[in-house]
Every structure is written in structure tokens, then in C-alpha cells.
Length: 308
Image (tube, rainbow, N blue to C red; front, side):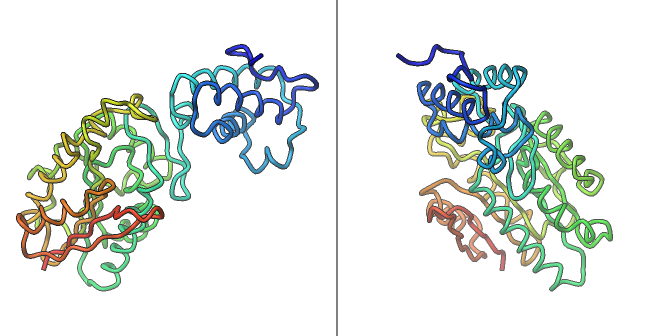
């Protein structure tokens, strides 16, 4: 006989952390979670103010009724499909804690490649160029990538060697981005702007040296299917049109007018989309060199477009 729905921490014996994890995992497994044990450990650890390493090292720690009740509530929310990142209110990403809620997309592990690429590109330009460097992140969402840049290049921003702009069409997403930047003390170093893609009024004078974009690239049909966390996240941050490339094509069309001489654009794309992006660049911005970077799964995840 299975565990009654909504009952957590009722394993026989003392109410320990391991009991709570086991019961939460069983409930989430029954609800169809693809990662029930991981979800359970994250939620129990959050209730106890501990991480997963601590849980593994202290499985017999006694859990009080307050924590058990909190975990029970969170597990039911997760069983209903709500992402763990929204339940906990944050996502550990790129060695940072990013505040998350339904105002913006949850930062994905694969987007760490975009952040790494942006950091490397910015560092190379600061070393190479005597003049200042301008970077612009379009569709910043939670602000995760801009936060990675601001934390890494805090000194360059303070000295005026680097200018960083982060824009989004969603004012709510920009509020969340502002909160994330403020949490690390760099809000005053980043210019936030509300607008659609490459609107001229948003563009830095003289063009941008580095353009970074993680645009919505999920096909509309896949968004409609609502798998995983997608039903809980803003549709505008996911839906890229029939083939997922609508916004990417629009942005690529505007690159020649936006990129400074020898400027670079870094675009995150979905699985199987890199070739279509290469073709779009070739037809709309021929004076460019296009290369790609693969993520840990071997997917061409970041397209680098260099103006020549």
C-alpha cells in the first residue's frame, strides 16, 4: 500500500532527515517527478538550512515538526509540477545563487556556457583594447549572465573600462534582475533598460563590442506541450515561434547596425538550431565569421558571430 498523498515524514521510528528524504522522494516518485531523490534532498535541505552534502553526512539528525510540516507543503507543490527553484526562491548557477520566481525563466545549466563565453570574450577585449569596452545583454531575464559579468569585472566597470547594459522586454524580469544585481552589490554598475530586442533607443552610441543574447528559442508546439518547468515559467521567455527561431532571426537582421567594428555576438541556441542560425547570418550579415561552442552534452549551444 502506498503512502497517503500529502503525508511526509511518517516512516516508523524517529523523524530523521533520512526518513524525511525517503518519504518525500517516494511521494515525488509517485507524482512522476523525473528526479525525485534530488528534489527531495533539495527541499529537505532547504527546510533545515543545510545543503545536500550535510544531509548525506548527517542522515540520523532529528527533524522537528515545523521542518516536517514545511517539507510536506513544498513536496506537494513540487508534486503538482512547480519547479524546485521557484519553491526555494533561488537557483545555484555558475557558482552564484540567483533569485528565481515566476517573473523570469529559471537559469539553465547549459546557459553557463554562454556566461563562460561572455566572460572570456570580455577579458580578451579588456586586455587587447586600450579603449573602453561596451557589452550589451539582450533578454537578460533574471540577470544571471549580466551578474556573472558584473561580479567578474567589477573593477573594470568601476573604472569605466567596461560598460554593461542589460535589457529585457519584460519590466517584471528587469525588477528581478535588479534584485539579483543588488544582492551582489553591483546594481549601480549595470544599466538596465526595458525594450524589445535591438531597439535603437537602447543601443549604445557607436555600437556594441559584445552582444550577448539568450532569446526564447523553444518551438511553440513544444511550449504548448508544457513539459518540465515550462508551464510555470513566463511563456514570453520560452516561445520562439513555430520553429523556435523567430526572435533569433529578428536579432540577427539587426546585428549589422548594432555591432561595432570587430564586434562579436554570442547567441545561445537550442539543439539542432545552430545550422539555421549560420544560414541566417550568412544571408543577412555576410561580413562575419561564425563559429560554435558545444555544451557538455555535445550540443552546439553558443553561436559566436564576429564582424570583420
